[in-house]
Length: 264
Length: 275
Image (cartoon, rainbow over all chains, first blue to last red; front, side, top):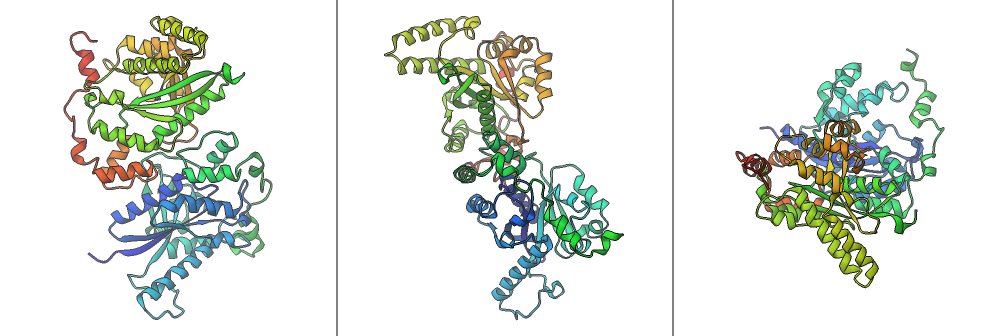
């Protein structure tokens, strides 16, 4: 049997707030990737989006980071990275991936004592150098078809160069999303679909709704996170109105640029 | 309504808890939110009562482990407690009897707490007396707690399974005590109530609570994942996951326990005259 390929999983999102379901995605993905016999998952990264994203109800990044850190205190392989959240403007997912991949590769090259020249090009990779894949939920694949949300080049790079690990709840939606996208279907080998058999649909939106209404969210997120939310009085009617009439940053940022694909 | 006018409620959940999952714990939270939101109730306690080994369900591991895990899981709760009485009985105990046991315990505790208050004591004694008469339980006007059975819609459905429940037990559970039923799909619960004469008669005593987050963590799924060496993290509290690993619980072998044994209630209720 050939050596397993070391793999790091990166999850990008609002994490507003982080829930047990987010952490389940990592566990399910790792189990599945190990069962394929091809990969060795060596790390997981939670990367909360920056405040510049402009999503309604998005609380400050410092709080979202703090909550994610508390939640992942008990994990020995998933950690929080605040690079993306500290960028002044929203960062394209592919830019965040490039940053982390560069970092991981540098670490690896230093660790193996290999010449660490300017070789962040994947063509120079050996079979034992680590890979980075984007971890996402089933609904994520659907965002690729929202007009103006993704640049074609970026989808190409995320799916083609890095790859996706998508955890679904048993329906055929992920297969359909791949089928219906030219770019995704071209790179289907690079898209790993993981089945989740437990229907556990804890959305952060529902969590915020419950918190606004004074309902219990215990056992949906770690106690330490719930305590933090109460201490800082985070999710209120007011906080939900943040960015209310603001366009999502990807939609404004990407239309500023002369993108030929949008003229098609 | 003033706080002293609220009816106190104790929620009792009976089941295998093989093992306890976050979903079991969520049911308590959802039920409490719902009942307190009606403005009529204050939920003062939740009790988890694991079934005894005599239940003979397939894959049911020893009660001592199931109770220990439930205790670990409720460690962080300030209102849900585990009670080992049912699990320690040598034979399987009907749920109606478990409810009687806990109701008597509650009344005794009330009496002891307030023995100085003789007026109240008299009221409680009257209640204890009224307890013998099923019709008067809900018409009484005092401040002693009500006991309600907390369950999923599957329990309502199971009332219709032949020989699983005694008719008079169902009548006692829903008529005298009451049910709080957590369901993902309100239609299901209402359908089962509609289709059953006894549930329909006592429908005002059945609270159907909609679950707003689908959180379908079945213990069967958890055991299957454990047998296959898959992770169950974040489906159960971390201390329970550690306990399972330390004791090597839930293997292919443990799943074969009681494999060819008839469930105790079916044995008892199909045998020559029960009770």
